[in-house]
Length: 140
Image 1: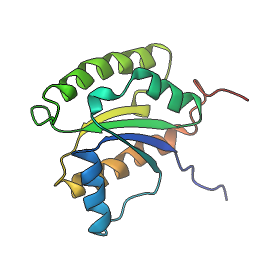
Image 2: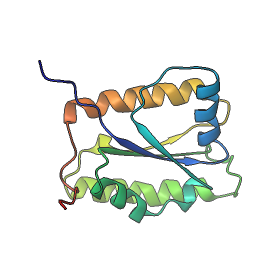
Image 3: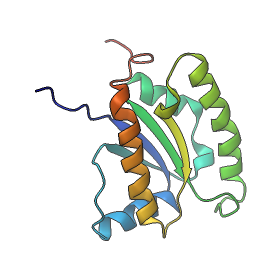
Image 4: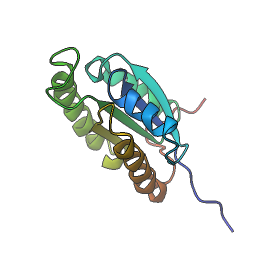
């Protein structure tokens, strides 16, 4: 019997909120799939579109960018900039043929460990039927 596909997900997590929410999930011993590769960034607004394209071209099956809720950014407007910029990235990825669930944005605060675990579970569940991402993957 064939083994079920397990997607690799690169997650860019805001240091102040989303990364802290992931930490809360961990120290609270909440269970979620081990499919994410977390990368802590100072702010979701600092995530360049190049980071997303790079992750996908180097073998990620999905990318998640998560930050503070709009209005709660430690850098005032960083998540507003992220929301605007990353909405354009999502449209560009769809234009070149990448399935929409492969790139997602979310807002998770430091106290939302449960929300973080649910987010990861749902993301894995959405990516499994799609199989490996091959549209942007470089062949070395």
